[in-house]
Length: 496
Image 1 (tube, rainbow, N blue to C red):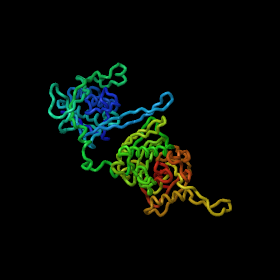
Image 2: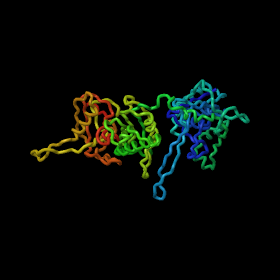
Image 3: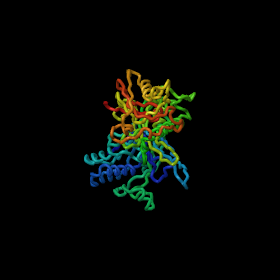
């Protein structure tokens, strides 16, 4: 007997049944044996090409010799809708695309068991090596950890034997299974090649009816909320995403993408909570609509952390903590769509937790007594001139840039910080990324400093500062106008 355990690390399985159109919204469940074998071949060829075919093909042939039985974890179905922009006859339109998936109970693996298959120790080692390199099963969003397992739970999905129907409530679904003996070229066929041949039926596969429990999509969904364990993500202060797209946006557009991230999180929260509003996500009081004070609500911080001058991460930092519904809304945002013919930016969830969990992961969460600008500091108030003119004809400056940033920093980091100094950088360029010297950087005035929803700052001015505290402070350090969208962001500067 051979058993493979699959754990979906994002708790989602994205796969459309072979032969169906994606907008039909019918996810494949269980994963078809044909898909599993194709996933093994893809992983082998891309990550372990040094394994000779005479070592791998017998393993694939053994798996093709029988139809596996499954233990399916508690699950429910879901989908997202994407209004993708298209240009027709010079005019922008949108087309609706569904992304259907199976939502799997967290930390509940799926087991696929071949009762009649026996592999020798070397074959098991090769198969386990391939499985541990497998990044996903199904579409690329279906991240997976896979390995050979023992003692699988009782199966609840299996191939239907001819003229035999077990007692109980079952659904019958068609699954694509490999023919035996298997041919490697059949498993490696590309979709475009099949379409070119005028057929979408794989030569080396056949349809076979599978049984699954009729309530396989309802038990997880219908579980009462008050009996659930502690809500996933409740109390988190940090959620991290990687950004993905054909062309990543320039770091100069930090403010625009930070603002779009806020609107996307607010919109998702409203859809999931009957048009409700979250003060933490919006930064505004739910009843009066007035801006919140104290900066305990969410910061949306796009950053360039690899040195190419383009944004590659988004950090949502909520010092006042996210509740379960707010966390669910944030992690449900999988794309930022600027519309107007511009391509969406995909969000790839990386993790969540408290600020201390990300020390060493991102420079935003380090401890230091010296911090330098990563994005420009924009004055929240106007600089004023008062009193009589001096011998040079100048009046006394009130609310200078240094005074404003020192005052604001002292309010944010008041515990034990008796002295704060603020200096203009001699080099007027902002160093991107946090690793000094990894890029030539940008001038502060090159950054966009006008919000779509509220214009620019009241004080104007864009400056490149170094801050020095008497004692070490913990990041993020983010100050000034637009700080909740990524402006005024500082990173450790190292010793003077």
